[in-house]
Image (spheres, rainbow, N blue to C red):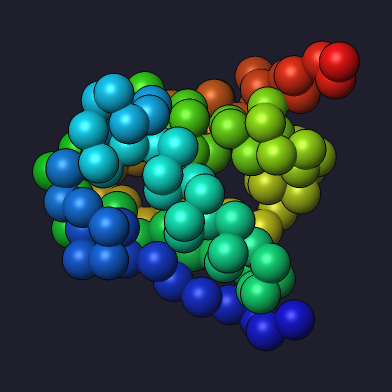
Length: 110
């Protein structure tokens, strides 16, 4: 497994990430999680999410993309907290994402 990758959300995905899924548009949290985050976590021990080039990081996107790893993908909360870090000039974005991750509960298996 490679050591580290940085995903520049604004340049590689969208400068306006928004929403949970396709009904909210192309730049949604589900798509980011499936097409970017999961692939990076398969190959790299640590994933840096660079939010410097985005115009915002709404809760719907953040919750779906990052807490979704725990809720839908089966990642342990501690692993997500250890393996993903964020670059942003706004401490509130980091605080909010950390809150979504810490409050996430795995979806009950059927």
